[in-house]
Every structure is written in C-alpha cells, then in structure tokens.
Amino acid sequence: MTDNTAKSEPLLTNPRVAKEEKLKALIAAGHDAYPHVFDRSHQAQELQDKYAELPVGTETEDKVAVAGRIMSMRNNGLFIDLQDASGKIQVFCHKDSMSAEMLAYLDYFDLGDIIGARGTIRRTPRGELSVRATEILMLTKSLQPLPEKYHGLADIEQRYRQRYIDLIVTEESRKTLRARSKIVQFIRNYMDAMGAIEVETPMLHGIMGGASAKPFVTHHNALDADFFLRVAPELYLKRLIVGGLADAVYEINRCFRNEGVSIKHNPEFTSIESYHAFKDYNDIMDLVEDLVRKLVISLHGTATITYSGKEIDFGKPWARRSMVDLIKDKTGVDFLSFADGVSARKAATDLKVYVAEGASWGHVVEAVFADKVEDKLIQPTHVTDFPMEISPLAKTHRGNPRLVERFETYVNGWELANAFTELNDPKVQLERFNAQVAARDSGDEEAQMLDEDFVTALEVGLPPTGGWGMGIDRLTMILTDSGNIRDVIAFPTLKPKK
Image (cartoon, rainbow, N blue to C red; front, side, top):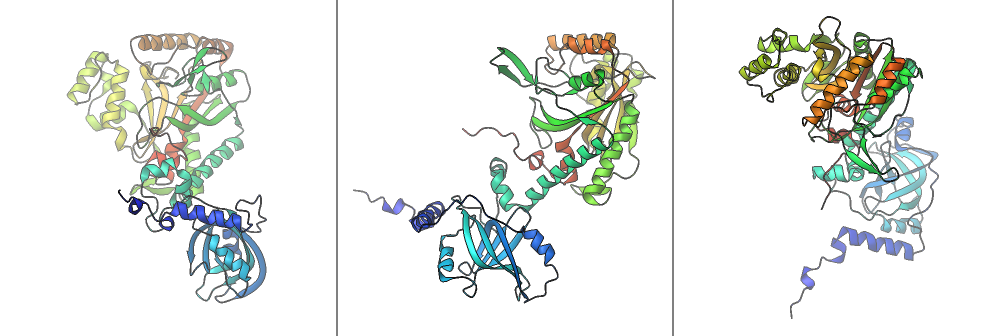
C-alpha cells in the first residue's frame, strides 16, 4: 500500500488553509469576522498631512480611528502597516496601551486583512507617524494570500484579470487609474464651462453608422431583432443639434469596435464626442488644442511631459499640415497630381506601400500616410484635409472638391482626435451613404450603412456644425506614461479563460 501523506501540503504552509483556520478560531472565540460598520475618523494621508510637523519621539493625546488593509506585520504584530485608499500609516500595538485580551486578538490577523484601529497619535523615535492602538478590530478577514511584498504581482495577465489585487499591491496602478478619473473630470468641467450640455445616446443601434468600423452584433429578444453595439454616437448627437437641444452637446461614454487588440487598441473604449453649432473644423482645432493643453498643465503643472523617453511639448502652437503635404514632405510624391486611383496605386507600389487592388485615390492616400508619415508625428500635430472617399460624414473642402474639411490630431505617432466640418447637405449625404452601401456590398465590413432617418434629420436642417471625438484611453496612456492601453483601463477586454 502506497503512503500518500508525503504528497499533502502541511496545513500551516498553505496560506489559504492557514487563513481559513484563523477564521474558524476567530469565530469560535466569539468574534465577528465581518462586522457591518466601523466609525473611522481619518484617512491615513489626512493624518500624515495634519501631523507632518510632529517632532520625532513625540506622543500626543489626540484620539483617532483608522481603518485599512494590513500590508505588513513586524515583531509579532507590534508594528502593523495599514493601507487605505489615501496611503499608509503605522499602527503600534504595545502592552502599555493595549489589554492582554486585545494583544491576544492580534493572533487572528494576517496580511491582507482589513482592520480598524483606535488610539492616539505619536511619532516614533525612528520618525514614523503611528497610531498607538488602544483597540483593534477585525473588519474583514481576507482568505486569499497577497503577492509577496518584494516581487509584487509578476504575472502581467493576472494584473488585468484580477485588477483588485493589482490595485492593492501596485501603487503605480492606483496612480494611473486615479489620473484617468481626473482627466475625465477635467474634460467634463471644461465642456460644461463652455456651455456644452452632456447627453446620453443609445448604445444599441439598429443601423451601424457614425464611423467606419466593424461592429459587434447582439440580439434583442423582446424585439426579436439584431442590434449593433455602437461604434460611435455621432449620428444621434447631430440629431440633437438638429432638434435645437443646445448649441453644443457632448457625450463621454463607451464605444465598441470588433477589431484587433494591441497596446493601443481595446475593443471596448471610452471617448468624448461633441458637436458645436455654427463652428467649423478650424474652430474645433482651436478647441481641442486648448482643452488638451490646459488638461496637461492641470495634471502635471507644465505643458511639457515625457512619454516613453520622448519629450512632448503641448505648450507651443501645434503644427497644422494637410495629409497630402505631409506625405510629400516624407516621400517627395504629390498625390494631388494623380487624377485617379490607378496612378495613385502605381505611386504607392513604387513607394513599397501595399494597397488593395482597385483601391480608390483616397484609400491609397490614407495607406501611404499610415505607412510613411503617421509614426513620425511625435509632437502634437493636426493633420488636415482628408480625401473625401474615407470621410463620408465630413463637408467638402472649400478649396478642393477631392478633399473634405477634416482633421486628426496626432501625438506620439498615434491618432488622438478626429474632427470634421460636418456635412449638412442631405442630398450629398445620401450620395455618400449610397457609396458606403456599395462598398459594404462589395465586402467592406467597415463601411457604414444607409441611415434614412439621419438623412431626414438633415432635411429638417442641421446648422453649420463642427464635431470632434477623442479617445480617453489613449489620451490617458500618453499623460500617464503608460505603455499599454490595458494599464489605463480598470477592466480591459481579455480572452476568456477555458
């Protein structure tokens, strides 16, 4: 008979089992492992700030109550590092200020437990601000062991799948997501201050439109109909301008695009999209530039930041260059000199840029720009005057009918914002939609659909309008020096575990 006992992990070397045993002992001793409430007087950082000038070795009679998670215990619980949402503070558990019963209570505590402590403020002879505890209380018994202190959460995928653990042990993750919250709040305050009103539009669209993208499809049981998760709120927001709800509207919300995943792409992303009556794309360039510059200064105290080792200056006037001029700068080829897609495709081939067979002039220009120019635009740059074929919702350029009044803002070689002088001629819009339908019928899954009601809205009358959208996730990456879009999304899209 084989003895299998050697294969079993000893009870106390398994952290989870050891925690379970302490929980049982705690309950058996008559203690509540999960009480309902704790009356906390201060957060850790409040005390650090309030007593910043308290001299070393000084004891006070000031009574406080703190609560947080145990991040470390030393000398059999004599010193406990407590972490709450604001920061850390030390809890000093000594026989001079705690009863024997209360000191024995320390035996139930483990790393990761959430506890409350009441006592007085002191600064230790080593200079550590501490709460000299008179009472401690278990608030939540943690049953899962935290990652080892000095190695942290080494498994990158676990960081994203179990963000709650990542936030406990990784200060940088907490800083990044808090910065994201400040970014969103700043944008909202900026828009409100200029008189724009925040609105909500549908997430489920019966017709896919507002951007060229591959959508997610879902089924509505009650209506027995398929809907698309929105790729953009554009067409609904412009309906609100038609209706005269306000001269400026905006929405900060989720969009969904069933496309690739990369360090700067997540299928579910957050954007702001906004429309301004009686404005054009020149006005919107000014707005985007002013908003982002002020945001950077608000977050960093300066308009110049460093991203991935590169210095980026948001303070200087941003470059404004047309797409075809930027291509000409980099390649020497003027694509406006080509009358059609055939000659443009040949020029792209000569430049060793792949373009699809039969690609239009506008799609060729787009491909050459992406290959030869895009990643070189490190400093903030407004790329203007796009080909009409790739911009079905933008107004025709006043100086060249092959182009539209559209710009994209690039920083660090990434598209950050996209904006138009909005097309408001219903007949032209219908022609553009029909061209998109033909492209979709030919196999282009990203081409937009015909939205007849939107054309009707334009027939009612959309005033001259400037519109823009900006990705919050990518903006946050740049402003927090984050190398992966998953770092700035609390719960990024991941492949399900089998």
